[in-house]
Amino acid sequence: MACRDRPSDAELSRLQAEAEAANREATRTAPKSNQPGFTLSISGQIDKPPATLGWSDLQKLGQTHVKTLNPQSPDRTTQVDFRGVLLRDLLAKYGARTEATEATVISVDGFRATFQIDDAKKYDILLAIEADGKPIAPSSGGPIFLIYPFSDHPEIKDTYPDRFWAFYVTSLVVGTESPQIVVRAPKGNFTLHAEDLDHVDHATMTTKVSWKVEWPSDEIHLRGVRLKALLDSIDVDIPDGSKLLIRGKSPLYNNPTKPILIDEADLDECTPLLAMQWGPLEKPITARQGGPIALAFSTACPKKYDESSWVTLVEEIEVVPP
Image (cartoon, rainbow, N blue to C red; front, side, top):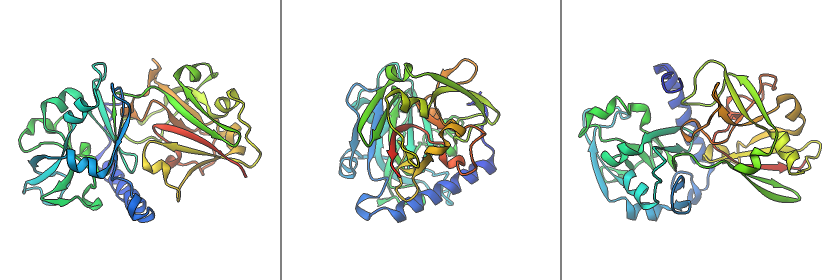
C-alpha cells in the first residue's frame, strides 16, 4: 500500500523546496570544517562493522565515471560526467548480507531513497562527488549526490524516477538495522537492543503519520513502546521541567540550532510512541520507511509538535535537566 501511494507533483515540489531550505540552513549554521554531507556512514545488514568514510576516503574510492542526463538540472539535454563511488562496490566492500534485498540512502534533510540491491549490482548507480570535473555544490545536490545511469539505461526511469536522485546523501543503510537505541541520562547511559525493547510494555496508536516518503496518507495502525514507558523500564529519572532530546540518523535531527525536544510535562498527554511496527499485520518498519524505530505523536499533542518533530531512524534519547 505504501509503495502504491505516491506523492503528487505538487507534494514532490514542496518536499524538494523543504529539502533545499533544510540543506541551506544546515550548511549555514555548521562550521566550515564540520559541514554535514562530507562523510558517508554505512550500516545495516552487513558483515563488517558499521563505518564512516571521510571525504578523503570518498575521493580515493570514487574513481568511476558515469555520463548521463540529470533530470534534476534545468539543462536536461546535456549529459553530465559524474565521478563517484559505485553502490555495488560499497555493498561488496562492507559485505551486504544475502537476506538484504534493498538499501536506503539518507540525506542531510532526512529524505530517503531506496534501491534494490540486485539493481545496484546490475546498473552503474553512483554516489557522485564530482560533476564535470568540479565538486557538486549543495544547490545542485552535493557534496554527495545519488545518481542513476538514465542515458545508458533509460529502462530504469520507471523504477527510479526523478525523486530517487537523492541530494546531500550522508548515510547508506543496507536492508534494515536491528532496533537499538541509546539513552543518555544524568546518572548514566544505557544501550537498549531489540530484546530489551521487547520486554517494555508495548502500546498502539492509530493516526495519520507525518513521516515523509513511503507512507500512506490515511490513518494507519502503529505499534511500539511509549517513550515514558521505555525510560521507566530502566529507572531513568525525569525531573520536572526536563526536556527529552531526540536524535536520529539524519543530520536534520542532530542540528543543535533546531533540536527535537519534548517537554517532560507532555509525556503523559502526548504519549509519544517509538514505533517499530505498522499496519494491520504489524510489519516491521523498514529503513525504506524510516525504521526500525521512528517517533510518532498522538493527535492529543499540543500543536508545537508538528511534522518536523516526527523523527525517523531514531538512535538516541537524552534527558536534558531544567
